Length: 262
Image (cartoon, rainbow, N blue to C red; front, top):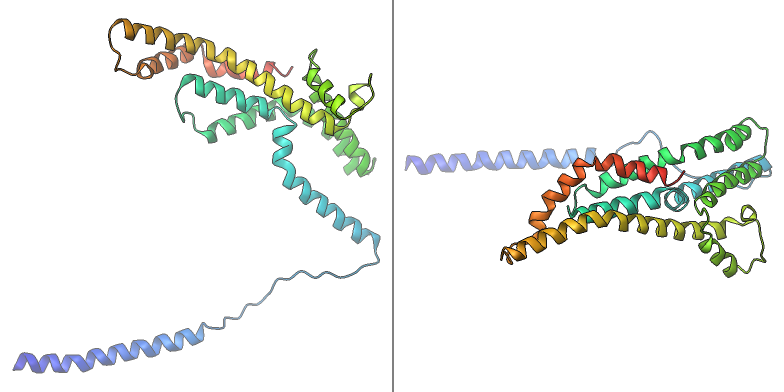
């Protein structure tokens, strides 16, 4: 009986605590329902008769457009395409699956591309950006000089093999003979990309040969020993990694990629 009486007394106390908590939650929710913000954001579009305001707006739009296209410019008009493809061929030839990871390969390709393109960037800064920032030339002249510098870099990569460039010249129905330096970027860029792909695949083929020989030797050795069920990759992978380390592979592949552009 005493236990039942104590339980009956504890129930009202519990109900009181619950009611108090509900009331507190109600008042706190009302207190934070409409918070006061000391400031607000907004964009106002108003007509203007000042040409300088219109020019500044157009420059901002062009800057945002360039920033949007920056990844494509980096990939298609620099040494990044050849570099990342050669590094991907190297990883496939080693057979290390995802080692090194994609982030590491892309980072290495980016910094190698920055190293290779540094003379081009320096020339653009000297010939176009600095004179434009000092007010010596107009924006159109700066863009023309920048495109000329990049075009010279791309045309230099063709060497004696101008087959891809001639293809797009014929597709654009441009009368020949023509000076390559006078060609528009719409013709030079796709020809440059195809040329980069061709060179990268040739380099990838040369990378595959020594590792392919190791795979063939290991496979024939296992077959002669009757170990048909043992995957040759498990045996050849350590030997390929050992060969790559012995020839100082990363040093060699980086030097080969950089020298291929000069």
